[in-house]
Image (tube, rainbow, N blue to C red; front, side, top):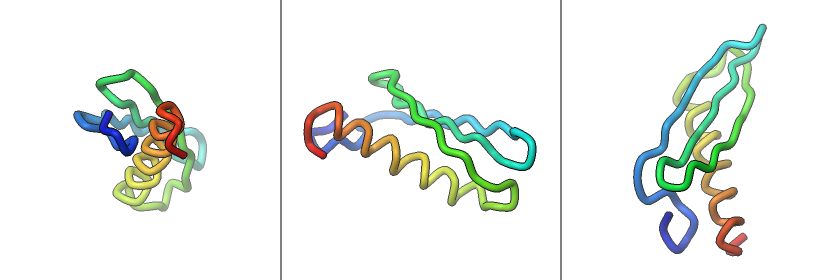
Length: 67
């Protein structure tokens, strides 16, 4: 993780359908910290990925006290 809370290395994404929604998990490879977002099945995968990444970045920033 960099000083501003953004992932420095790889981020893994998992997309799982849950009924009429998609559950997206974003995992920071360096720290193992993960976040989950839910979105409609009709949403573009790129939009859901971006949303999950922003949530992960905020969580990582919070871990370093830079919220």
